[in-house]
Image 1: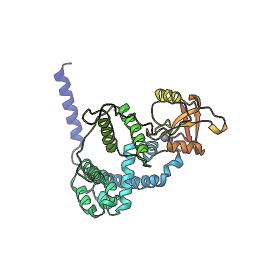
Image 2: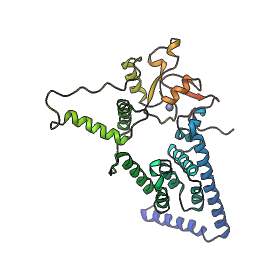
Image 3: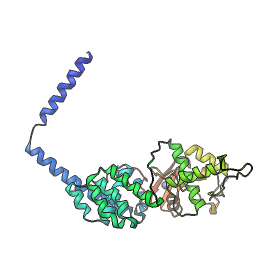
Image 4: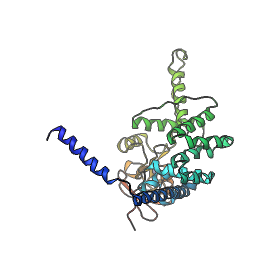
Length: 318
Ligand SMILES: [Zn+2]
């Protein structure tokens, strides 16, 4: 069969499908009803995910984040976070829900608004941002909101830069973020913007011939090494084999990681690879407090929550 034949077949197939979509009042009504119910379902999911996100409720099910919990529902982590944000926005501005229901604001735009509505610095501007949510695409709205928050943080105008990086570099940047947070003495992680600013300044202060006088270069900081108990070679080997991320299935955390003893150190558990798993701070806490269990090996562990369900995997129907 020649190329022309294939194209003809494709055209005739498309035409026959199209002819089935002639005006049909019954189908129109069905589509409108289904559409309304789906929006209602989205709103309901947003409300419930917000509930699940409040006060780390998801941790009771062994999950480390709302994104991690969303995976058990078959959502992507991004979708779960978006819906939980929308739920937060509905809690902060109840009339927003009606705007989503009527179709004047998308649920993604409502989710983007959550950041503005929960930030006291923007209290006086909430009307302006609600108006922008009616006009802009969700992506454009989110970009504008991120920029406004970054400018409020920096107390001056900022420029948006998009970086494309290898996942390994993103992970190393996460580690840098952790160390910089610890050097700054702040409890939460510093922003990625701050990591870039800090590392550029750090580099220039040491390597820029215009700034450094010969013979005055300082050694790098040794801050940010909280777990001295485990030999560095053991830690390096574990990271090399398993990657720098929490080993609980589906957990997205790659910063604030701990080397967790499977058998507690206090009960004679060793500091060798076979007795250590990499866990984020929350999974470490849940494991040490018996809220999640581990079977299998340190290299390929299987985690279950207190109900005995596999963590981070879709749940089978009851
Ligand atoms: Zn984790």
